[in-house]
Length: 364
Image 1: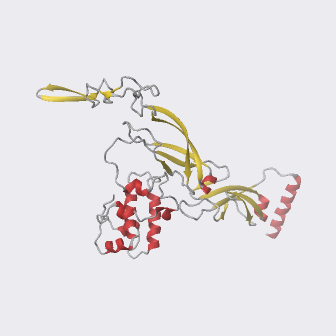
Image 2: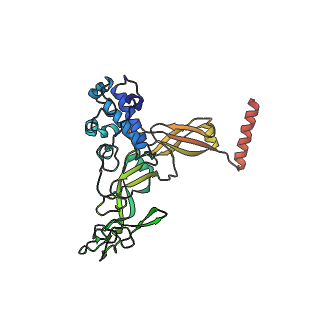
């Protein structure tokens, strides 16, 4: 929970007299920027908490009045439940709590974290290339994943179910061996892994037949991932519980982070929410103008090429790009035009170009 004494208005970048809509828009933009699933900077999570705390106070008339009166600083001693329970994150972002992995922002960042119990397993990260059509519409994509998983037979103990592990007597279950020596009145201690149990603290008399005592098995599976509309390049979608198994028996597994990339598309180049398309037109069409059928993600669109179009002219098709994540607006499709100058001419074509040149010289 952030306890900074910074001014909440400064945190959101709004004036002290900002209205509710201004505060809401400022929070949405900053939260999207610093959400740890999208921003991998080390301080992103703390900044996100700070931003959310400021919004939780300033978006509530009673809390804002108390804050303005100087009676609330750093959350005012309120619990996370007091601050955030009344905020509808799905209304703010147009997506379920911006959690992206089945768990809400409130659950992930503002409730009390586990202070005891087995350690969580390490996280996994995989890349997923999705077509631009999926970015446009959102929906399900499949991730093929092979990962170590806790053995279902021994539940990670590595021992046969009928013969559970027993405590290692040489190390008394610590998994460590300590040796001491005295040199010139100074006692030196060396701590090493117990050679009997290899650091586990327990001894397996009868290994599990499924995992051969490892406590883990390889698991291959197809995981359905929900791609949000307008998913950004490099956005990480968090899938809880699909990471590596815990190093401790009955510990929770880590999480899977699916990093989304746009699949190559021969028609378009993606730049944020905008798309770029390259089209080559004949010289005569550049001179006289023409109509052109241009591919878009919504089908073909007819574009008017004006007479006298120069090479590398860029035409803009509004609202034909990709949706902006969490918003209803769309980017643009930019059409860059190249003009093809013929390298070889037929006799008839050369005669026409010669006549055209003569006309130009006579008019000059």
